[in-house]
Image (tube, rainbow, N blue to C red):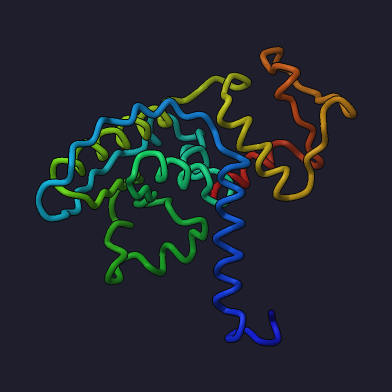
Length: 206
């Protein structure tokens, strides 16, 4: 495929879409999304949006961005599928490359970098449906912005497992016991990683 990029461009796109679909199904987390009963479409489609600010001042050491996005953005993608809204992290600190963020600040289409770190939620649908979808998505994002005590975060545990599988460092715990200072991990959910756990956690920033 590398030798004939134009010839296989369509095939490569289809393969990438299929990989993304399988990853979403494999790593799906059970969000308690209360899907609203949507009425029949009425009127012309519109785009509605809302910002949800991330409480970084109250919790400066908590990795909210990684929690919302997940490995390779899969957590955000799943929420988009379940809520019918686009979910984007914007504002100061939203880019992984801080140097590049500083270069982009002040440029056209990068105005959001002057704002505080936030989640931008957008929905395109008819007015009687868009606002319902947006309300549901905002509710789910706000749940993710509530810090969870270490060892009791099922979503974080799922994300770490996803990342370990993607990186090829996942090891079944029945073969290698997991060392942890927390007793709240259920044995059925434990995973073993190669390398430093703190480094693994930091890589959730996508």
